[in-house]
Image (cartoon, rainbow, N blue to C red; front, side):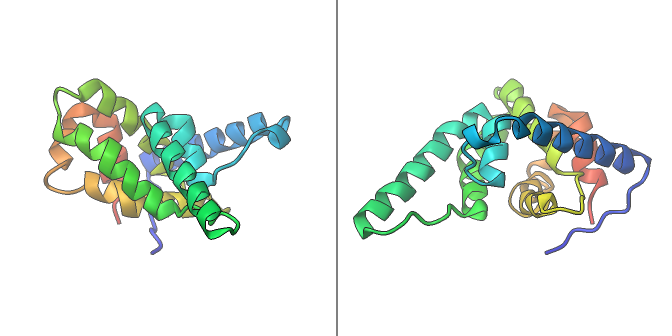
Length: 165
């Protein structure tokens, strides 16, 4: 599923900022990339931007390794979509359902959307954006959660709802 957006003034600014941030992160890793273990673009992104997702990522990777040991084969790649579904179900949705008590934690988790949602680049980062659109942002746009996102963080809400297809 490809998500096309027409960059308006806000969309274009968000895209430029997101591209600059992606470039900054890539440059930061270039000097020691041989020493950093990549778990995949989605897992790496979640790891960097969500402390709450780290135990989930750990469990997912350990389970994959345990299954490989039992099969006597190489570990399978962890599915980005499955990881985002787990993140949404075990981290993001409980915060949304517990709002306003979880306002501070929810606002922190939503910061990832500031980076991911508006990015439309020429490389495979668009794949990550599309996954977030399908597995995370989709839920934020529902009638149930939209008012919560708008109340919790109006700037994130503007990004999420202004970049609709």
